[in-house]
Length: 506
Image (cartoon, rainbow, N blue to C red; front, side, top):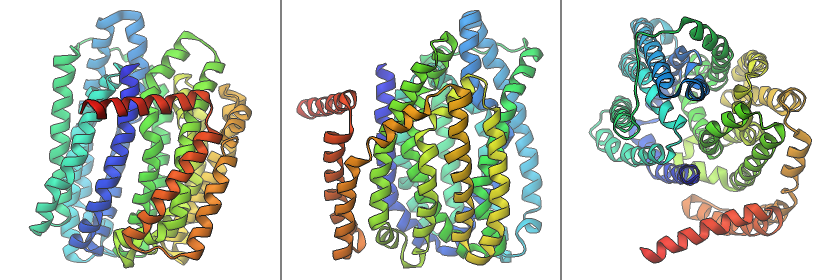
């Protein structure tokens, strides 16, 4: 329980830390790279990230089969599972190197239409480095998955926070030396290697991780393949949904439009992190609840409790961004990126629904009922591509974002909520009653924010901060007094007491 609480708190701490660092570092990075080279980096990174699909969804299956092996066969069973997953991911890593090598060799054929000869050569180097990084990440993911299954979240979050701090510290000198976008990937590769080595050492020395090879269970592999297939399908769909826009823009409009979309998409990723940083902590607990057969009522309560916290936090960020997001992006990225504001907003609003329900994904997987979601998301991705192509040709990055938004509203907003209620056993009427009961407390702060931005124009970082701090304080006061229930207020008070106690000791 202490590991879980620490994991949740440090997850939010890492989110805040990475956001603050990004606010300082990203504008400098954008100016040192220039719009064209940043667009090239965004384009190549999004394209090569498709190789991550070669895990075939097996990474998400580890916790489920770890828990089952531990119950049935103890440590010996876990060692066999570790050996199986390591063998599988070593093979996948080798295959990804082969496929990536083919892509690197054909980079001219892929991007020749819109890139200059110099940009193509830079893209070739970026792709080669990114391929190596992804290939190594496959076998190393077994160690991070083992740490998650053992619920040692404190180590994971601390290492992630250290990496977040080191990234700009190492990166900026290289950018100042004129190494450009290549330095971004080199630093990522180095920090990934260090992080992976630390995880390996922690697993072996601290957790006593064992691997048994030579007992490859092909029957179990067939079962895992059946379980993982729809996770893999869903990974493909997610990858299409989140990379199709930059790929289309790179082909249709070139690097400038891709760079503007990349800034809006980055803001959206920060928004997503506020929610996804907490859900991973509860994956082992969800699998235990399902394995014990404790019933859907406990899952509904956990699902709703986490969803309410996520919703209250996300609405603070979303409403604040609506009010001062435009001057924030202009101060952060520069005036040439002002078109990123509507793109970010177009992505953030519809994403709010799946973000407050992302624990439902883990509940589906724990129950082995995630097949339907993959089918729905396949149709969403197909619709996204079909809509985004004409909209992107007509409206550029905003049109591509519109296509993504429409598919999310239909798939996540309507279809998946129906499925949660009718087939997963979650009481979605109860969930939405609990979520919507928090909205009245947000209306007065939102009205005050709207009036404020109408009567005063906020510009630059100073203007954004001058609005954000009073608005956040007013929002927090009303939500604490009028929206939170007793348990939620107790949680806030407990955190405040611990912070005061540590401040007094320090």
